[in-house]
Length: 91
Image (cartoon, rainbow, N blue to C red; front, top):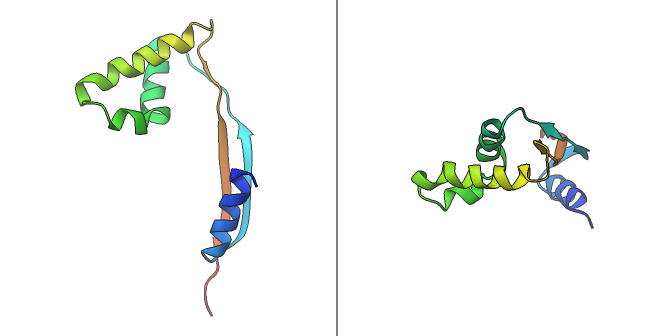
């Protein structure tokens, strides 16, 4: 069972009805290394950065951005999970 179908099953079990989930590729092209590092820090690396001291977080994000840029492009290739659902209201 895929992660998307597991999520749908869990939402339905919690009383959320009309669950519709889908994945969408969302490549995001960025204009500079600074922009890539900022995107990584705010969107992608949150959990990893929480375990680092505040003074090391920017440096870590910049190192990840530099490694990604070695591919010759400033693009984040990721997949977005979309969810539409309605909570069933008891009458």
